[in-house]
Amino acid sequence: MKKLLIISVLAISLILSGCGGLKDGTYGGKSSEDSRGAYGAVNLEIKDGKIAEAEFLQYNADGTVKDENYGKGSGDENYQKAQNALKNSAQYAAKLVETQNLDKVDAISGATSSWNQFKEAAKDALDKAK
Image (cartoon, rainbow, N blue to C red; front, top):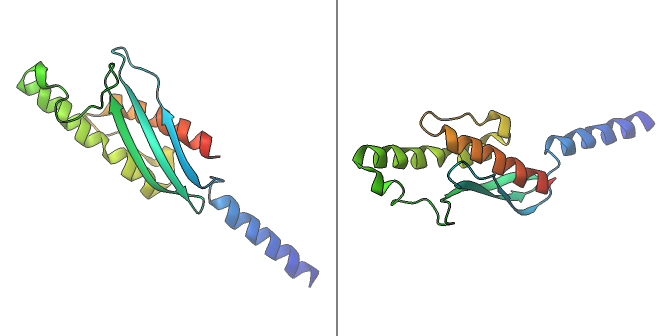
């Protein structure tokens, strides 16, 4: 009987530690600014110790969100590159929810600058959730 109790306690401990030790709630993280003053922000919702939702927003130096106008004044080719980078970087948050592990979210070609911002901001948010 004593062995069964010990095994049960160990099993429960392993199950709980597998959740990553995240506290339920909403947490935000921010990256440092790049050379142009732009930065990224990650918002996480933790439920039952897991990342239930994640959002990655990128901001211009003036604090406005990078959106469909991002890169518009840079010529057609640069505008398309900027918009593709925004579109590709939006996948980072979904991948974080899917994998539940920041180390398993890979950089996407054409969105490596935003990858660094995402990684830094997500780590900041996850640290707050611990």
